[in-house]
Image (tube, rainbow over all chains, first blue to last red; front, side):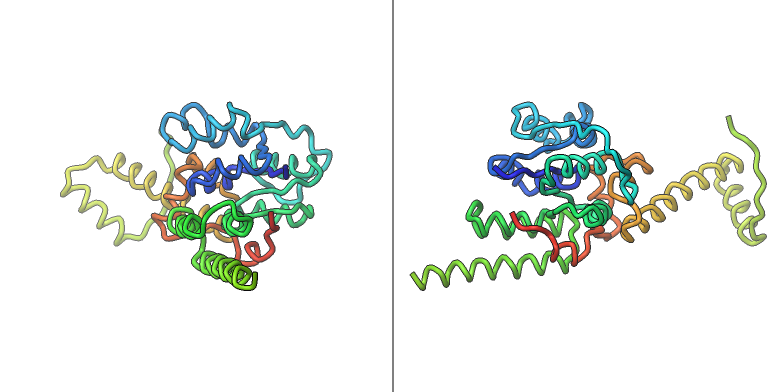
Length: 176
Length: 97
């Protein structure tokens, strides 16, 4: 099972798209302790249903919580503790894929040569891997635009990729 | 405890404030304190979100500075018609599963 380290921004968007449970079934999702405090503190759980979902997944072990330990180096770009811990954890776990929807965290990941993925890409990939339907993928991308505040350019590009994947699958069926 | 400070403001603006305070039967000092607090809060939010959209601050750094929780962050972007600070090249370069 592939490993994925998620920060707060990715957990929130995956939860808002109703994809967090699917991702937890398919991947070993790991978060630093600081991230669980940021998104699923007792106060947040009471007020945000998705925070309660994250807390539930964490307590069931579907989301694993790990402490990154000391860095041994300084990140070139300043980040909030949770974002920095997620990056560090990703490096310590033999460069596990970092799921983030934050531009500054991505900059730091690029600098440290950590592979990253953003939620629209996760959606398209889940469809490519036949883990979600085309409708679910399209609905999720639309949510990422409306609720998730992804730029229209990225959502348009993601929808094109999704259509290409769909057409590719259709062509494969025709050829077989 | 409130501390005194001195600022210079344009005469026209001061006249307008004084007139409004008088007409509205407000306490001048209390009103100016309230306006300063509101204005500072709005300006701080605008400036930090501008830094966020430029990629100079992360989502959680903004939340910490403005005492927002991350679940409200997206609604705050929506209210200002702003987008996440993820660039098109980030989408293009993102890894596959």
